[in-house]
Amino acid sequence: MDQAQRRSLKEVRTHGSELLPFGTYWYSYGPGEHVIDCHWHDEAEIFYCAQGCTLFQVDTDYFLVQAGEAVYIDAGDIHAAHAYGDEGCSFFSFVFNTNLLASAQYDAVQENIIIPLQERRATLPRWIKPQEDYELELLEHITAIKKCCEDRLSGYEGAVKGHLYLMLSGLHSRNLACSRTSSNRSESSKIERLKTVIQYIQDHHGQPIRLAELAALIPMSEGQFCRFFKSMTRQTPVDYINSYRIRQAVELLRRTDRKISDIALEVGYDNISYFIRVFRKTMNSSPSEFRKKLQDSMEGPE
Image 1 (tube, rainbow, N blue to C red):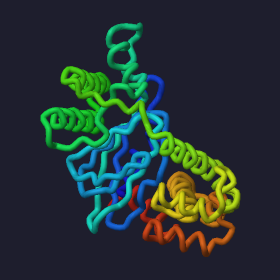
Image 2 (spheres, rainbow, N blue to C red):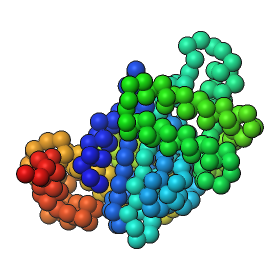
Image 3 (cartoon, rainbow, N blue to C red):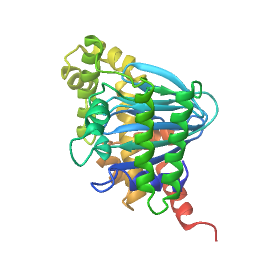
C-alpha cells in the first residue's frame, strides 16, 4: 500500500465527523499482502473494486468481487476481504452514517426511503455487478462518489449526498430495493457469537489471550471453538489475533518514533523475535524495514 493511500486511511479513521458523517478509504494490495480481517461498524459501507479480484465476506456469505463491481454493507454487518489470485488489487471504500441522508423534519423522504434503509426493509443490493441497467446506474453513481471524494471540489459534500439519494430513489422507482430484515436464526446466532469473540480480542489484544477464555465466551470447547472460528473467518483464532496485533503495530510505527521493542510489548508480544517473525510474515518486511520505507516515502526523492 503506498503512502498516499495509507495517509488517506489514517485521516478518516473515525469515519468523518458530525458535520461530515462519512469517511473515504483507498486500499491497494500486492499479491499475498495483508488482508482485511473480519470487522463491523455502526455505519453502512460501499466497497468498490477498482482493480483485481477479492473474495468478499458479508456475515456468512462469500462472493468473488471483480474490478468494476461493488458491495453494499448494511450497518452492523460483519465483513472481510480476502486476497484472491496471483494479482494485486485495489479498492475504494465509502463508509457513511445513514443519518447523513435523514431529513431535518419528518417527511415523505424520511418515511419512504431513509427509515426503510435504516431498518433494512428497503436497502441496496448486496453485490452490484455491471449486468442489469439498474446495476450499471448504481455503479455510475458509486464511481461519481469516488471521483467527488478524490477531487474534493467546493461543494462536493452535496454532490455525494445527491448521488446517494439518486441511488435509493432509482431502486424505489423500479421496486428493486432489497429487504434483509428476515434472517436465519441459526446464522444470526453464529454472527453474534463471532462478534463477541472479535470484540474481546480487540479490547484485550495488548494482553495474553488464551483459546480457553475465548471459547468460554460463547461457550464452546476449545476444539469446537477453533473449528467455528475458522469456518466463519477463514483464519484460525491465533492467526486472527496476530493479524489484529500487527495492524495495531503498523499504526504505531506510522504515527510514532517509539522503539520497536516497546511497540511489540504494547500490542501483546513479550518476545521481540516472535513479533518480528509474525510482522515479516504479515507485511513482507521487518518492522525496521517497514519504518524505513515509511520515512523514505515521506521524505520523497532528493
